Amino acid sequence: MTTNCFCWPRGKAARTTASSLPGQLCRQFSLHEIKKATNNFHQDLIIGEGGFGYVYKGQIDDGNTTVAIKRMNPESRQGANEFKTETIMLSQLRHVHLVSLIGYCNEGGEMILVYDYMPNGTLRDHLYETRNDPLPWRKRLDICIGAASGLQFLHTGVKHPIIHRDVKTTNILLDQNFVAKVSDFGLSKRGLDKTAVSTMVKGTLGYLDPEYARRRQLTEKSDVYSIGVVLFEVLCARKPLDQKLAPEQCNLANWARKCMEKGTIIEIIDPYLKGKIAPECFKLFVEVAESCVRDEGNQRPTMNDVVEKLGFALELQEDADAAKEKINPGVDYTYPDQMLSFRLAGTTGDHSNRYDNVQSRHVSESGVGTGFTATSIGLTYPSLNSDTTTTQL
Image: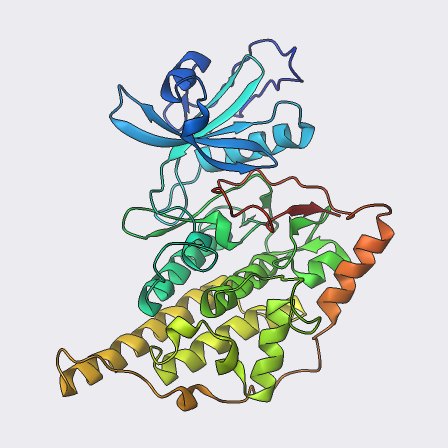
């Protein structure tokens, strides 16, 4: 593949520029086509908003194709870098569990990306603070397996591993069939085989790998940590960080570990799921999630392991459901909650406060204000951006 050459706009005075991305991989749109697709960026077509700018629902190809159009803020230097990264990454990647980049526009000072439209929004849309019906447990498992499979492809299915670096429920999109698609590659980094990459710390609080935050050494295990937080978020239907809760409960990953150690994990799961998870499936699922969010990367599984074990957890659920259906066809059935109570064995020390301490240290060292700079350009949807700040430390 030929080297891609980009000329990047700088502010409002940018002249029209074009990219040499291969046309067969990534379509180049004119600004006129983008304006036509969005009715000149009409506010009624806005479906998402973040530090990057706005996401619009658009129509291309004479109205025959619905797309999501992400318009970057041209004043953001970081936005230009992330636009470049995402365009190059996604133009070369194709996988059923990665969002597809249809094309881009780099003209007249605009930085615009065009994606497949995901009618069911984000995974976060279906977990909490939403009017959507709760997702059934097996559908949640399917989505988790899909997202993990997309990350598995990034880690092992390309010549050099790609570390996503911003895995979260607002970056897991759902198509018309609720198939999971990992999105937002603006912070992604090409890794080195079995070697950490020294880099500035970026990611989203609550999902950020504490080892990466401390050492500034990025590996695939950083994505593993983040997917572990997603698994607990799916199970518990609550934010990864919630400052309104008691200090020991505000960090979901830490609180879930504490509850597992005390044998009280059943008390914090989504009430909708109670009685609907087979005990064998539940035990394996939470063990996988816990192993992902361990403090040290070398104690975490690979993404291959995560995909394999989540797939087995789904099989256990399907087998248990089939057995109950065979006994009482067509009758609603439940699983006793007390069967979901167990203590986590073999934990290696108390990690409960270490991640919070790392966050606090970075905030105090950064000076006035929050200490974090919003840099996310994720394909997210309204009402979901209030606590998904991407951080640069």
